[in-house]
Image 1 (cartoon, rainbow, N blue to C red):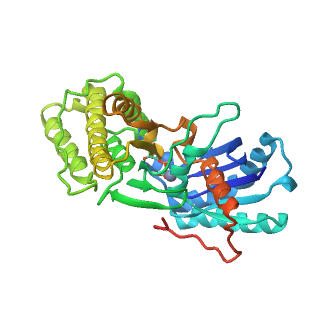
Image 2 (cartoon, helix red, strand yellow; image 1 turned 120 degrees about the vertical axis):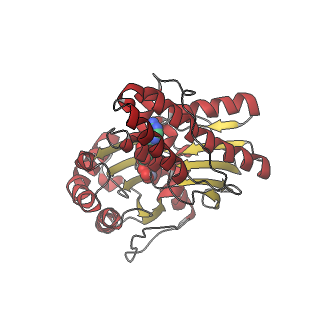
Length: 338
Ligand code: KG4
Ligand code: ZN
């Protein structure tokens, strides 16, 4: 048995989790509402909010897990990628806390952790986990990647966005429509009331397994601008149909390359991860792919889609088993690291 504390602070969520092997005992996240009025994450405000939240969040995670801090076997933290100021809060705190408790420190890559969230188990609800090799579509606010996962830490990015990420696209089209940040969940909700075939938007023609979303965003912007000339209420009158149509297009683009990769690599074990994997249309598309293409699909429970510390703790557990520990000289990194 290994009790591991996970700490996540790469963007605008301060999160702490305690796990026993791969079973989640607690997973506490403090979201930062402070960014809402700016329509996006303000890095300086994010790191300040992390400083305020980190101790209460960790305290609550340990308490809810029903353990004592002295019982912890290791501490796993997000070293990158992410916002440097935000990462610095989690990294500095983790180093000090691990040193105080005299337990090993384990650094985790945030993007690998989104994928390894599939190995997290909720108490009393053992679920099947993907077997290696599998493909994972990781879609968040900052990343859109198709990753070939050969082992827990042997991962290869086989395709990725050359411009905007899928989550960023949801957020930007929402902003163009005057909807609040983050736009993904808002569009998802509005789309349920709309007709996804009402409007057509162009799909990019990009080589291989890579993605591009900036053209789609621009054509959405021009489309609205043209229609607003004749009908100033065009957005208000078509909110649901616009949401449903743009969402359908984004998910269609995502699935097309994922199918191509599945065929090329001969892998039918397919997972989705990251904030956008909470999207209902994407989840439906995966169910359809399971039925029609025979994919063995893995869709994360909602609490493991957006940023959370359970995925950091689980990743830490697999490193703990291998004895892969970090020193007090660990510093955050903004990009890469896979
Ligand atoms: O993984 P995540 O929490 O943070 C990053 O590491 O970026 O992902 C956040 C992104 C945001 O762009 C948000 O709009 C998007 O995930 N998102 C969604 C949904 N829920 C969150 N996008 C589409 N549909 C959703 N239901
Ligand atoms: Zn993330």
